[in-house]
Length: 358
Ligand SMILES: *Cc1c(COP(=O)(O)O)cnc(C)c1O
Image 1 (cartoon, protein in one colour):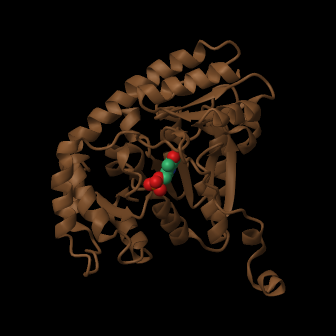
Image 2: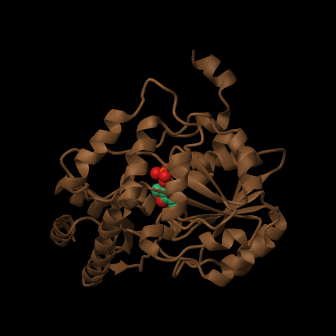
Image 3: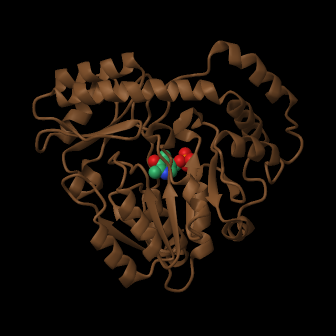
């Protein structure tokens, strides 16, 4: 068996480790940028009725046309621009890279950033080029990125806006320069759009090589697995050819439609989280030896005293609070931890545990 695997499985796949999701059973779960709030009780009967009416004996609508129409309206998708759905935005990242993969084609992204860009490039067998952010504030090093684009001629550039795991928004002029210099696609990944209150969505009509990627995951519907890609329909038609026809299941379509009909509820929840983010940032900054980085997302990256990230992460875990240790992810993230903004009582439990550990 082992020799067969060695013979047939690509070495770069054998060298990988599967995406690890730690168990959060019984813990305050602040590790995965989920919205902690459930739907209000009065929304549930209407939802159950939709689910009861869903035809699970039939294949889903491959175009998810009703959901698409609702979504275009809720998010004010620019006139004439296309929308394609993915089973999570992760799937759309995969489809984009698969569509552009070819002899010598490359993916380029800043570093550190969302790990799936690199992982999926590896799965698909495409070269991956990363350009370091500035170490002091994680801003985009405009000259370095432009130089790398010129030299590497990437098929696609991914920009997470705001950037995961650093939380900041890249400078708009630098992004504009990247879009103008890129020989191929630029994908702006707005997974945290609800917390950033700024967007490039309207610019997809201006730049024919720009696509904007969104997801409902961080908005409060992580369990659904629904992402969407917006831009010139000519690009989306190509990407659509490799999308598996029934990637968005019947229950996801019915639920997302219902959720978007009640979008104001999600907006109230994300507004509450934005205000909690401010409180959490100030509280973190109040700890001696801790530096919290400003965030336009629903998480905060913070640096603890030198060499103590793993110990503090473990101490929090022992006290029932799960966050994410970013120290091993990149040299630039040394001594850094990332906490998701939760409900006030969860954030308080995190702060109390941190006080005890630090
Ligand atoms: C969480 C995240 C995603 C993944 O979103 P899904 O829709 O849940 O697959 C994509 N991009 C970034 C930057 C993220 O942080």
